[in-house]
Image (cartoon, rainbow, N blue to C red):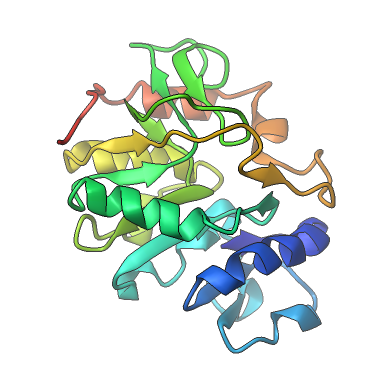
Length: 227
């Protein structure tokens, strides 16, 4: 998980929801001037951007990915995860024999989209109901999980910051790995009310998404499926 100072309070809520379900949580702090006391926990490893390779934006959630082994979850510092989140994601990974990367959020793209945020065929939001499993093009990395037997992610897959959903999805597309958006009820995943909504990728980029649109239009997308 990556975090920025304006999300400190929501970060604590996120960790409280996910820590009981995890063996280890890696937290990359972008430009924090201190390490919050609640991060002093036996399961948490903290990486300050000043001590490593600088502000990585959302790509910070992939810091150290070269050494990941087993079930890998990338999470978001403004989301509150349900108590059965990890078990549900792992069950889906195993149901599909580790052939797919799963998420609770994503979209199906149009060919030659005019706007990544506003011109697509179908969108699944993690906060709303998704009535059935759906194979898709792009996934949300804030609610993503996979087994490292399926895919070996590298920091090199992310040539720019704050576009990790797109870059991860492009990497999976090139590797011919299916993206599966899982069935879920509304409000199973919730949004912390302790974060400032002005400081989000969509808030900054939805009005001018030329880089995102150019990226998704740079390849030909295929819906890949598995049994």
